[in-house]
Length: 407
Image 1 (cartoon, rainbow, N blue to C red):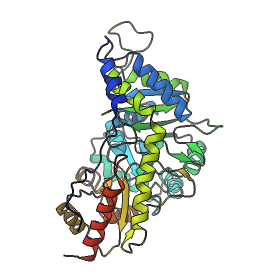
Image 2 (image 1 turned 90 degrees about the vertical axis):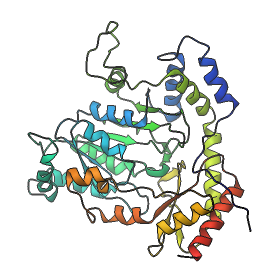
Image 3 (image 1 turned 180 degrees about the vertical axis):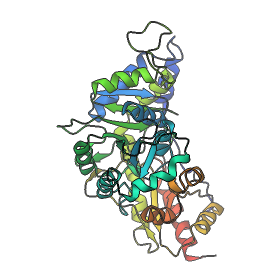
Image 4 (image 1 turned 120 degrees about the horizontal axis):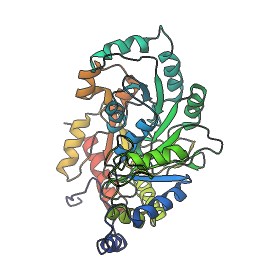
């Protein structure tokens, strides 16, 4: 029997190069708004294939600035997914707007483009179920709810798998909607041969993409994020908004607009630069760990390994999430793995069933059945680029044992 191990849920992949890069910054007078950030932005934009990259303090901060840039305000509507980390919906609430959830594709776990199109039509129909439902949202501190002002679509690329963007972009173009891509879990992902964040060749949309660099992400800066866009006006606006609303022509301590302290510091930028220099190595190592998992779990009947869509020409593995058979007690599996030193997590709790959203918007179970069915069955296993095959084998062996010995 394999001796009990302790497997971390995730671990950053830090080498001497990253430590040296951060140390060098500490020997300079520039700890904020300095040359490392400018270089990180330039190299990041080049890697993604976008014209501009704007460093921010977190992926959430980046999404918030995109919501502001899209002109989303009090009572406005933004279509998004309920199967995501809660920040993708919270940033809409920051501006006192309303997230309009639509269900997900049961395979990719991303927002369903067909339902996005249906939601756009429904919101703009005076007799639609969606519009009548909006009346129950009035208690969210609105004096005059503008139920006709749909402003944007906010798709999320869950777990490193890109959403099916082409039909979403088509709908946005037809209805003059901004598109805010949440790629906080998907740096390095490719959709139909194009890196996420690189606008289509003939893109005439108001479009921006956000990435995040938390320690469990493909690259890390500790905390931090990046917005990429080809929109000249949005680039200038993002740089002002992240720096307390100061514009390029403003004098010191002069501020042209309401802004935020969403800057990315020089130490984080230096760490990001070092990680970006290793990006192909880091992605390849994650691909290898995912391949080990796929191999060891391929014949386990009660476990469904992650699906990769035909449109996903490169999966950028953020986490490794399996789906358990409906008859499996997931909580018992989590407890059984924990006894063997293996952490695991449900991924995700549907946003509409989070306490605040239930209380504020009167959501209930059954509102988004695919999301809820998926959420009941998903389980994230330990995953990082520093995992060894021995550790993956240990996790898989114990997962099988737990599944074969139900409580």
